Image (cartoon, rainbow, N blue to C red):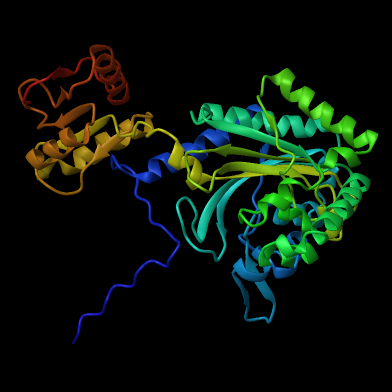
Amino acid sequence: MARQETPRPVRGTQDMLGGTPEAFQERFAHVAATFDRVRKLYGFQRVEVPVFESTAVFARSLGESTDVVSKEMYSFEDRGGDSITLRPEFTAGISRAYITEGWQQYAPLKVATHGPLFRYERPQKGRFRQFHQLDAEIIGAGEPGADVELLVFADQLLRELGVSDGVTLNLNTLGDAESREAWRAALVAHFEAHRDQLSEESLDRLQRNPLRILDSKDPRDRPVADSAPDIDAYLTDEARSFFEKVTSGLDAAGVAWERNARLVRGLDYYRHTAFEFITDRLGAQGTVLGGGRYDGLIENLGGPSTPAVGWAAGIERLAMLVDMPEIERPIVAVIPDNADLQLAGITVASRLRRAGVATELAVRGNAKKQTERAVKAGISALLFVRNPDATGGQYYLRYNGSDIETLRAISQRIQSALNLDQLMSGTGAR
């Protein structure tokens, strides 16, 4: 019988193994752990939403005409005949839950999450078909202070990840509904007057999503886009005041920012603040974190008129920027002298772990092989379990290149966990 070929991983997905020096998973986990630590500093509660939703949730939130909905979503009909979609982003699901779960009672609601998302797009550096994002939202707060809170949170996250050097916060305002509509009309008139200079994609956007022409990457579009009117001439007094309060808040918090009048969000429910943290270290795909205010989204989903603002950041892309964190390894390896002492080794390892001591207990190999593997892995100390009547006692602790203070601390923790008055130790053979 012919040997069957092993199935390959699906294109645009990745496998990650921790504990090896080159492992991407270590950086990935470091980003997620830092996010969880920083979000607690800002009082953001962890939220969980389903990994799939009714397709209508994303179609209504992202817009039927967007590339995500028309080309990139993983949608399928389930056995009950319902159209289901794997989530391509977090905001829509969180907004749906805000409506259906009665979370309005907690407004203003500060929530954060992270996990896998799915989009069928061309894989490239830092971009996958199953990818992972961090997400933070403030729902039910229409004040500019909510925008400031989120932006300061994002800035501190990037600083604590050690990636803030070379990252620039680009900031713009889309105004209120009146400002946006007036600006949109002016843009359409401008682009219509220069139709013959626009790319095919921008001509399509002119009908569906004219604001997106402003951030077109096609060289043919740049002269027309660069000469288009800015929103500033169309801002109402209220919209101008809102943006000034956001920028003043950032200044007060010591967060550097740059105005980018060409930064837009195409969907009509976006209002006021739009922002991106951009780096030049990831090639053409330079945004590491982005978001904005989406005051009309929850209403689009059938809920009450509710102000909200949020951001998302790709974990893979941030992990590509962070330095390799120190790999966390067990600090003690328990090594039975022979096979007859295996049960004693299990007992010792269990007592150490219950006392909070990270402990390695090998399941194969003799004492010599286990010792070699523990030394190679860089485990700080090796605790040999010997016959009770052995000269020098039942236990011997061998140090593996750690400093003296660390060794003393390890020895004391082992003695406490095992109720030992003393523990033989040294740097040589047992």
